Image 1: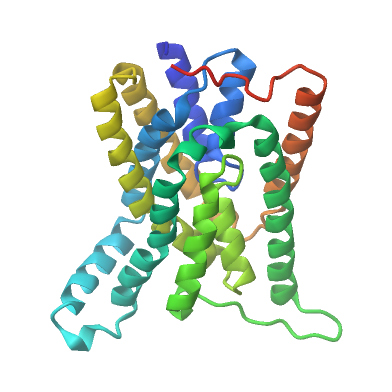
Image 2: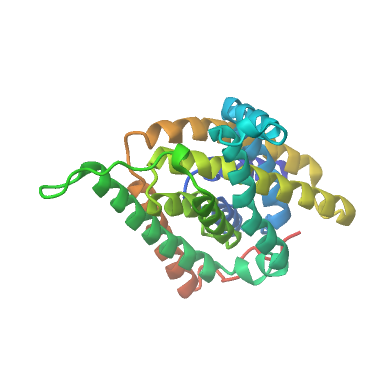
Length: 291
C-alpha cells in the first residue's frame, strides 16, 4: 500500500464511519474504482481504532461518567439504579451479539461477504429500512390532523431488552454495506427513540466492539506480518482527525434534520453498483486480491 492510497483510504474511513452509509463498503469501492487491492478486514479494523478514538474524545465526559458510576455500582448498591451505571451494563449487554457472531463468522466476513453484489444489496435494503424508520420518527414528532404528536424515548428510557436489540442490529454491520451506525440507528428509531438518542447510543455501543476488533486484528497482523504498518498508521491518524469533525457535524445535523439524504444516497449507490457489475465495468470480486 502506498502513502497516497493510505491517505485516501484514511480520509474515506473518517468521512464514512459515523454516517449511516457503510465505511467498509466505501473503503472497498474506493479500492475497486482506483484499481487498488482491497484494503482488507485487518486494515479496516485497525483504522477504525482511529475513528473510535475520536468517539472516545468527543463523548469523553459521558464515558467518564458512565465508567465511574458503573465501577461504583459494583460495590455500592445505592448506585445500581443510577442511569449512568445502568448505561455501563447496557453497553456491555449490547456488545455481546457482535462479539459472538464476529468470531463465529470471521472467515465469511473476510471472504464471501465481500462480494460486491452482496454489498450493493445491503446498501439498498438497509437504505430502505433506515428510510422507513426515519419516516416513523418524523410522523411521531409531527403528529397529524387526527393524531397528536407522540414523544419519543430518550436514553434514560433504555432497557436491557432494547439494549440487546440494539446489539443485534449492530451485529448486522459484520456484513459489508450494512453500516454499523445505520443498523443501530434504524433499530433505535424503530424502538421509538429520538434521532439524537439513537445516534448517541449507537456511537457509545460501538466503542467496545471496535476496540476489541482492532486489538484482535493488531495481534493477528503482527503475527502474520501482512500489514503495511507505516501507511496503515498514517491512515488511522487521518481517520481520527476527519472522524472527529464528522461526529461533531452529524450530532448537530440530526438535531434538526432527518436521515433521508443518506437513504437516497445509499439506494442510488447500490443501484449504480449493481449496474456497473452487470455491464462488466466492475467484477463482483474487484480488488479482492488484497495484500
